[in-house]
Image (tube, rainbow, N blue to C red):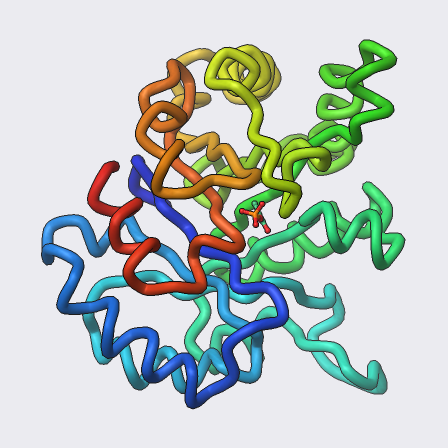
Length: 251
Ligand code: PEP
């Protein structure tokens, strides 16, 4: 289970094992012990083991950015949940917009990955979010609902303790354009209502809802203060230990 307010860094295709070791050597002394349990980092999978070694029980959570649903076999280039866990992951990022839009991952594939991760014992940060075209067509809520309902499928939702949802509007990722705190609140309320539909009002609160999209030290505090925002998923600004630590300190 992820403890809110969650501050998570998605490094994407950055920081190999050596840079990862240097990053944590710089980050750890900057983070007060009491907030470390709410911080998570998703390095490239080749850097997970180095991250685990560098963290040495510091309490920061590690996650894998992507995985495959099969446990083993002839799937060249893929990583199973069990391999990710062996390398140090306790979390998995699933359905990131770059997976969906650059690599053509479908709602169904994202759902399969999430279920495989959860069944193996990982906590999933499940990403949802609309494109600018979908937002301009007034379809943002509908798109996010479709992405989330694919995860629920016909068998019902996963345990709320094994899930966090990240709302990442595609038009705000890596573009420098951020959703306003009011935009984030509107969508987070919508996601909370989807969660309540399946978990009931009480248990829906067990699933943190993170905002992601061009978060920086300059805008993190106002986004964190927006009603319904339980944490942040940060790409670019998580690559630098100084700016990432500054954001962690605002939570
Ligand atoms: C992300 O990759 O999840 C993300 C939000 O990226 P950025 O902060 O760079 O927009």
